[in-house]
Image (cartoon, rainbow, N blue to C red; front, side):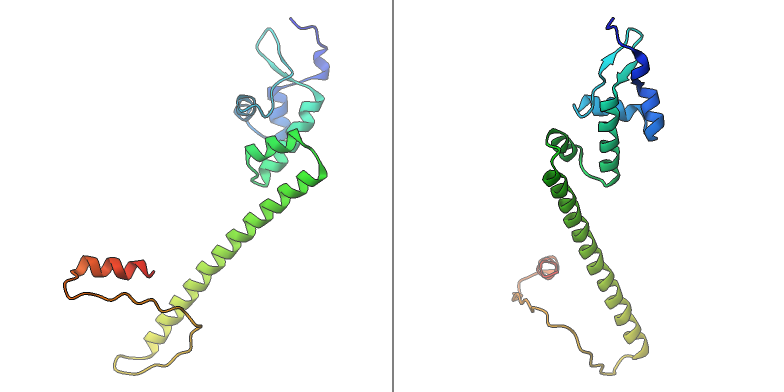
Length: 159
């Protein structure tokens, strides 16, 4: 057995409790070479040093930001301020793309609701004029020989 003062180490259970994560998470981090125990005692307990405690704190906080294991691993290998800021900038860009996509979905939903409301107020056989933003008009000629399926396929391509 390695002769170490166990009072200077945390067991996997202690670390898991401190960070409110599962012991399985610690096993996974070891499996992917993100955080391995300093040593495993004769009774099979996995023991982590104070430095590994600090590393786990970084890992848990970056995972809370939904930063990938691969990116965390790269950061732990190069703990520069620039690398950390790059991680944050990449995550910010990812979040902004999600926000943009969700805003487009919300805008589409609002247009559909407005269209439904306009159609509700205007019975058939009435002409309704409305202003819309410029959109590209895509035309695909339909052949007389096109059957229903091919016409629907051409229509769907224009989305």
